Length: 424
Image 1 (cartoon, rainbow, N blue to C red):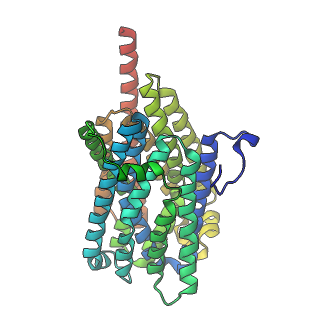
Image 2 (spheres, rainbow, N blue to C red; image 1 turned 180 degrees about the horizontal axis):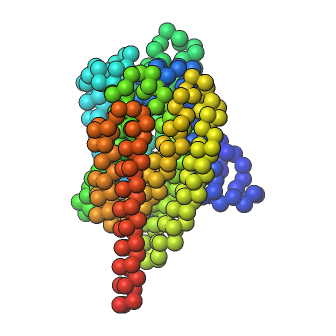
């Protein structure tokens, strides 16, 4: 692996590409955790709430980035040569256009965003907006690596993004103390998108410069893109709406405490994304070859269940230790809620892997229904937010209902497939 930060020979130590990618994702998630933990310790709860809202805004808008990545990954498996070039030309053009539109909207309403979220400055929003076209282009690049199973280079893009964001943000905070910390964070995020473009694929450059052949699948691609975007949006909102709503309904101190709770409790979800990224192209490839995809799904569900069970148990037994270790004494009041938040996130992560499985095999009804069911979390929090504890309980209720539906549809689908097989 020539360019990777993990510069050792996979052949000499016999590590599979999937295992190396998982190790890289753990490294990147660890780096992102260090980034957030350092910000929490340096800024304190009140200022950290501003940082958390900017990071959450990135996660919310990442539904578009992940949509481009998933769609690109799917058609990178299905298309070859000139047809792939035509698809990349089509996808890249719309990635840049959508990035520019969203950037213009945020810049136009950056002062309104400051009022809504009670932030100290509005400039952090328009600085962040400048990087959106680059972010979506980065997503196309990653989707192509993912679909073609070039996991080493896919890993490098995440490593570069994480390291540059960490170094640049902390550098601006300490070397330019007169700049508001929220602005420093926005600068770090935008510059990290540029680093996340590398290594950039020559296929994308070629696709942009050449005149593409007619892409007859445009309607199917657009339909899949819209459905994926809808699902990604609902999942991002489910996973981040609580921070946004808490920031709106509670004081900055409480919102900062809750942001620290969310950061710790979501570790299982961040790691679960690693399995989603591995699952999608493999399921699409197996379906293309007419092979059974069920064992692969069950294997990944098993991984996430074991991981989440360990995290929930650990946070139940040692909540104060975890909070002190990660954020310090000033956040200790939030520790009783830690295991409950981890439980809600774990249930969501397991339900989510089923949803992405059905999306990858073109079963869209469970995706739409699960998105609607999952979105009830937002309504529950709006209706019941007397305390942070009540906010967490509402999420547990919503996620249990979502998981019950996903399991019910899974068993129905599996039973139907068995009956069809016996009939044939």
